[in-house]
Amino acid sequence: MHITEKDFGHGYRLITIENESGFHLSVTDLGARIVSLGNARELVLGFDSATEYLEKDPYIGAMVGRIAGRIENGHFSLEERNYQVTTDPLTGHCLHGGKPGFESKKWAYHIEENKDTTSVIFSTISPDGEHGFPGNLTIEVRYSLTEENIWELTTKAISDQTTLFNPTNHVYFNLTGDVTKPIDQHQLWLNSSNYAPLRSDSIPTGEKVTVTDTAFDFQVAKTLDRVFSSNFEQKVLFNGIDHPFFLNSSNLQELAAKLSSPDGLIELEVFTDASCIVIFTANFGENTPEMHGKNLADHGGITFETQTAPGAEQFSTFGSISLLANQPYETTTRFKITMKEVD
Image (cartoon, rainbow, N blue to C red):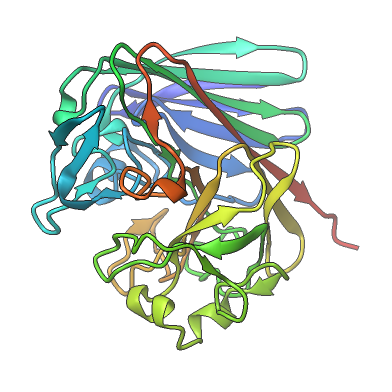
């Protein structure tokens, strides 16, 4: 493995790991964020400097938390005590744990090298009371790259008080390598039979609804244009997908999702021990940022946000996001990239 570090602007660093085949993973201490993944073809959305992330979109590629997604009205109860956390002035709901969140922190980091795997380990502390959440929370995020072109993400945490914790990584994939091309011809398969419908303000209704006979059924792989062209009510509300999908298995050894490039040369497989994947198809409309000197297409990327389903703080059927005092938290997601040679 080859490792390089360089300035990323504003005092942040960019760390790149490259394996023997030339496949690389680039991350930064700004938000413990993935910036780049691939070789000749760039597979994830990202910007060229810390400045662009801070000015254009701080969430792209970043770790998000303490709570990924929304908490209705910023209110929840925990151990018979009510909490009010920071809310977004536009929606009245708490978004991604409040601003500035994990995505804007400067994370400490160190590098570990092993025979077939190299890792960058980020760490930070969210102090008791930050944005209204209880507990001094210590978080560690490990990004690893293997010689087999696997990017593995492991998040660990511990709090000195019982709190809520439901982080994710906000990576966007576009397997064409061209940000001007939408993902509509990407083929998606999901190991999911149920999804969570949303209200128009993106708060879950609390239901688990079958995907069968809906545009959100990816139990048989299909291209995403079939969703975008549908009149399915939940798709129309958000101009695409922005929904939690409940996985049929939370086994890290079992395939959770598969995404294939339009030309069939790149295949992304997702494995996770999380119970849910939030799929977001970058439904930005015409309001897209410039990226690498080009305007990002509407539907120019797709996320695989592995976590417990947003809304779990009020809907027990979604799972639990309560982290007990001094109880270790750990979750792992693995992204395996297969590149086929052209005949």
